[in-house]
Length: 299
Image 1 (cartoon, rainbow, N blue to C red):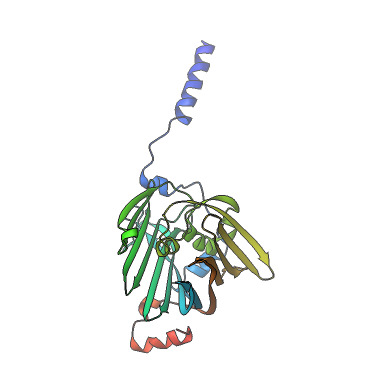
Image 2: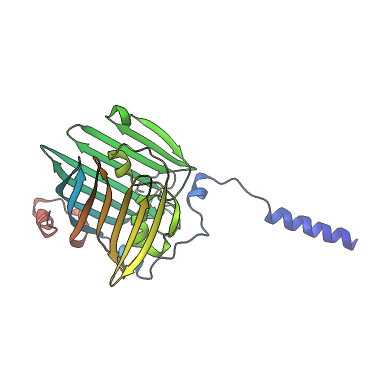
């Protein structure tokens, strides 16, 4: 009888701890047990009802030449819907707090202008990939648009006016995303894994350079020099390296970046140098009188 009771107890133990449930899309997106270690001042800085806006002087490589322009990064926290993967209109316990980064670039090539924008939505509390990324390019030749959604896999919609870059849908295995690194640097730069592994490069680079959207071998690093941190990601097969300079102390402000790659057979480098940072509820600053804020940013 004692042996039977022992076997019964072992069976009950295995039944409880070895049974697995199917994970929903939300569960896959939101692993509760894997929390990101945020900086202790994170909430005080990022939940004041304002966005952080930083302007940069831009030297953008395009068509084998450097073009002067302006870049802007807008970081702000939002509530995100896990299934629809859009900003939530109402407060709900199932919403996912995200750090959103909108990056804009504006420059002129010859007679015609470029306007680029990338949006990246990354969970704040979770050590988890970005929920959504979108990139758009507008110039006189036409439009290009890319959207990545983090579902059971990365689901990507690509639309372009180029025949060689025609409309298509992709489904990729989840690996680290270069676009997501930018938000991780602001949440906690030390969360980013250093070393060699597969990374999906930025949507901007892949779209503008007609590169296949997939994971590439990469090498990441984070080093300290004086008062700054320098994060880099290098892709040997693409011969491309991105380096981001940020303050060593919270809030890990991004001071500028460099992007080295081949353009029309030449090694060239895009650079961005910080002009100014402000905090503002910019969505309320839409009157004529508010244009003076742009002057302060050097835009």
